[in-house]
Length: 164
Image (cartoon, rainbow, N blue to C red; front, side, top):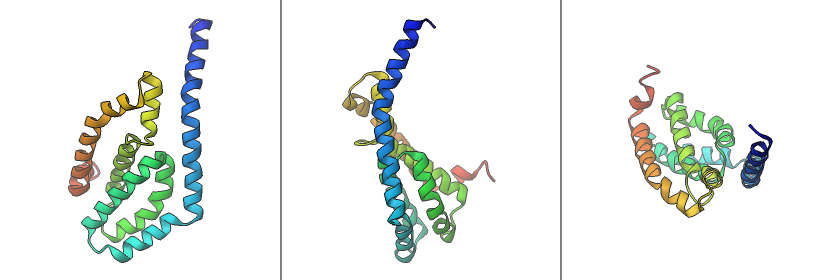
């Protein structure tokens, strides 16, 4: 690699990080706020007292995780949500591996979903395309991922066959 190529690479990387770092900083700040206000714990308590059916819990969990995935980056979301959702899921008889796979799929769909979708911002910077163009391009994949999410959520054997 020549010095000119190194310079161009550093500039390109800096431009991409300039768009990502504020988003990650905001997501981390949101994580701190939600944790300090005990929002995840209160949500888990509400769910166990109001949702009696395992399948309704899974539907609610999917909707909640899709919303969380749109607003937070995946590692922070897992670190906050997994310890809170695991006892609730176990109370409904949901396997921890199944819960983890549901969480990862949901959060990844959220990372690809406008308006925040951190992966959309990365793709916009990396491919030098407009946000709208990148969003249009990922829509078929989001639909496919939602289909996989439904399959994994409601047919646990799909996610547990290797474990068993």
